[in-house]
Image 1 (cartoon, rainbow, N blue to C red):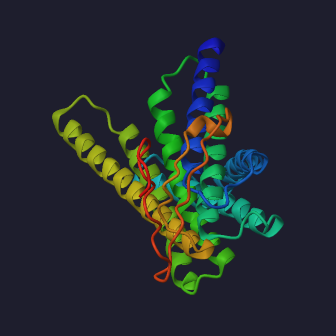
Image 2: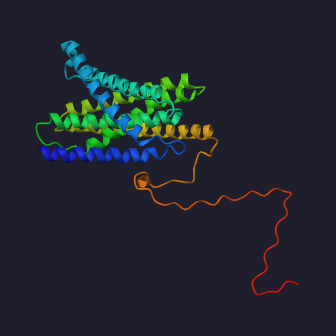
Image 3: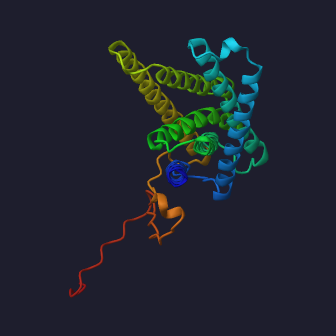
Length: 291
């Protein structure tokens, strides 16, 4: 059992590493240092541990009616998880902004650090599930969705702090919408997951309800992915404007070039001629005589 769970933990770590490499490529002009990325992942994992402790404390304070496996009880669990976990991730992003303003000075940095913190939170949640498991569990599909959900929701919420870091003129309007969207997406996803676990799939009407809930869940995933991608593209344009560069940099290095650098051919920058400059006459072909 422990060997099986260890392999699943390594699989989760590889997914997180691949996601970090892919997402970091979008920060073209001022990429975050690797040590800061590692610190963000570790702080995200610690924040998830604190959120789990707060959730257990709230469960002890809640009345017995709120812990029943009905719609109200599941909504209480989903709201508790969404608020505590998103607040913990947002607190880490705010701390990174205040502690390292030199590396957190653009709108896209908010979505970057929110993504890294969310990956750390997802890995911590996976390790917690593997630790308390009494028997081998089938986790690869769940782990992909867990990392996808946490880094999307963390990035959407972290983008709000990035707007404040850059001093965007619409930060007081967009930032609350980002935080609310991340919490709402988390709440709806957890509520649907609880409802799908509670419904047995042995009757035709129950199977139809499961199909409907699965369709709603996939709609949430698609809408969250589109929102994350839209904010990422907007952050890239703001960053390009900040650096006075075109938003689409033609140089797109390989994802592994950060860890295995390869020699690069220097690019040739064409010179711009002025209208007053006379065009140089073409050189005569070899073997011919000048008149």
